[in-house]
Image 1: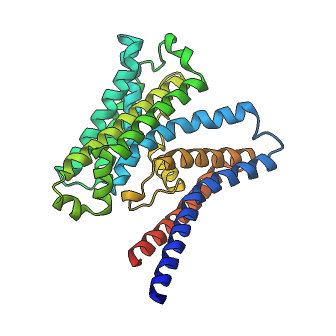
Image 2: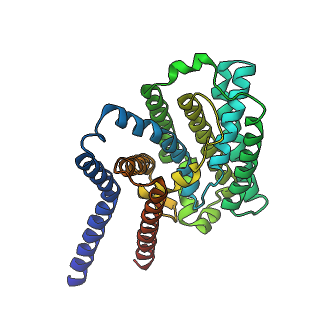
Length: 321
């Protein structure tokens, strides 16, 4: 009886501990919001500033939602920045030369192709996923940089009517809802989480591991394409800075949102939203404090390092349990 009661109490402690850990990212978001609201003489809470934070975060949150599929099977997609730049350039060029209505489809198509080739390089050529992603990133960035120099990169005038926060939020909500359903209720999401949690078990269960990994990269690429679409609409075109640091922002957002580095069943799509907002609130608040941009990078690096240590400690505790 004593052993049984001890086991029950241990299970209760584990459940309460897990519940607290789930709340930490959300509490961190709320805490940062309160700190900056109280220490910036009202500048943080202005409608213009809050609109700016959300519109900036939308791009990272959309890309992060897609990246959840890749992180679920314990991989990282480093193609995001270059893929975003390539999507933006291709879409703007086609939009100006052919039709403005092709900007969105081209973003989707190019993003999906980038994700597909990243996945194929990983599963067929046996190249580590982060290296395959970097190959696509460099190719995309190189093609985009070359195109900037010979062609105008402004979006068609008819698309400027969508340069509003409500449009970015609609796109974000649609992407989140569709991806959430796929991630939680279809084989694509369930199998990728199983692959990340226990790859041997996934193989023994007859799951086509390579197939579902490639699908995950394609979904990530599609979301990057949508993020590129929002980027060109918001910025009025594509430029040399399009997609810069997107992959690092996404990785930082997802870890700040509570996704374990080991992926698997611990991958939750809400992390993309919580982490994305946390990242840009932090960046904006530090800017309003007058912190030098160089030091902001240092702060973000320290925060990321702290989150990594917490994640590693959490993974070790799960293994020991």
